[in-house]
Image (tube, rainbow, N blue to C red; front, side, top):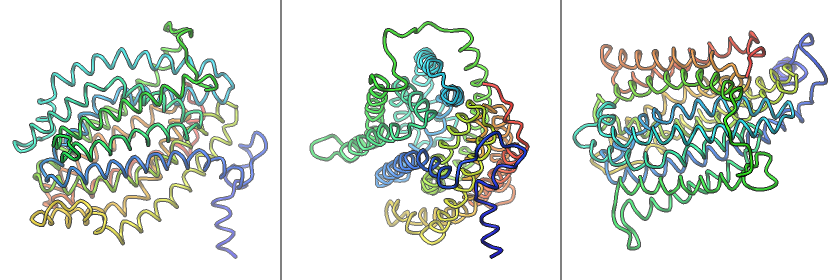
Amino acid sequence: MNFLNTFKRLTSTEYLVKEHMRRGEIPSNKEAYGQSLRIAAPAVVEMVSIALMDMIDVIMIGRIGSASMTAVGLSGQPRMLILSIFFALNIALTAIIARKKGAGEMDAAKAAMRHGLLLNVALGLKLTLIAVIFARPLMNLVGAQPDTIDDATTYFRILSFFVIPQVMTMTICAAQRALGNTKITLKVNVAAKVVGLTLNFLLIEGRFGFPRMEVEGVAWARSIAMLVAFVLAMASVLRKDSPLRISIKDNWRLDIPILRSIGRLTANGMLEQVGLRFGFIVYARVVAELGTYAFASHVIAMQVMMISFTFAEGIGAATTALVGQFLGKGRPDLSSMYGKIGLRMAFVCSVVLAMFCIFFRYQFASMFSINPDEYHVVNVAAGLILILAYALPLQTMQLVMGGSLRGAGDNRYVAITMLITVGVMRPLFGFLLAFPLGMGLRGAWIAIIIDQGARLALLLTRFIKGKWILAKV
């Protein structure tokens, strides 16, 4: 009986909003959890599907050898660095569009998206040029070795030519998620990934008359998939019945107040992205210094981590939209309630995923088995997946908390938190545990647990205090 009472107090909407905070009727459990799931479910399916297909990509690449898998893995963080300004822009647009949707100001929401698309083109041209010219120095920066530098440079350079369609797709999908239209982004991204996988199958090893292109084939497959996603995303906002419909007849002139609003939130997002990318690049460099085989084990375990990450990211997308929309409606009490619901959904999800990681870690890792001579790579990866299992509850809950605060427009606090934990703590503890303390790759992964735990503590404290309710967009 006591257990049932405790469970009810932890999960029931009746207890998730304190009496003095209530500004109206509180929805029932069925209505509140149902609304969260309606938005979260397509987002989770989308992101998990993409992660699984990305994992299949890595499996295909891994069949060539550890050097090829490492070459593709090394290019990841420099690409994220190039894209970081667009991630920041989309975080800002999500908060603004969700708030405008809640306030019933759809014209303002569409205007914000149009400004985002114009900024994509202007910034994308410059960053494409930088990425193409400095591809090789960037690969050297992240620790590419003589056996990986050429493939890593080729892969990075080809993908850099397609920055503009990629970032425009990202912005349209961010706007759709802000409205809760996660089914649209599901269709766009999964369809594009299927195209990419098919081309990978044909181009990596040269099947059905196609040339054997190996890592270069992966780059072209992913680039063509980006174009497919762009076409589908544009189609979703060109339809006459789309709430975000755009047209050549719209007002495409830049509006200073809108730019200021986007710029203020984007600046906070850039602080977050700089911290993230700096931390990830330095951390990747630490792992790369452990050698090609160690980095290959790291890449395998990271694929499993990304799958688990996507479950929380899907729940976080729903929480971001709902928090922002209800703040726009003048119901911060319901924004707080949906943030807490997302946190509980994330915890349950993380426990289930952790059990799978513990019991099936060798099966997961063995899917990436490259050849019998390199099977120790799989054994090391299985050990890393076990470490991941302990980090999962921390990871999923902090992602949802971050989504809640971003939905409210409290981007600056999230940015500072990311700067401290990912930008400083993860690479610092990763280095100390891996080298001075002699723990190697496992020490580098224990640093992830330290980072995730500190991040959850900081974000949860902020959410509980409620200052995010006053954030302006």
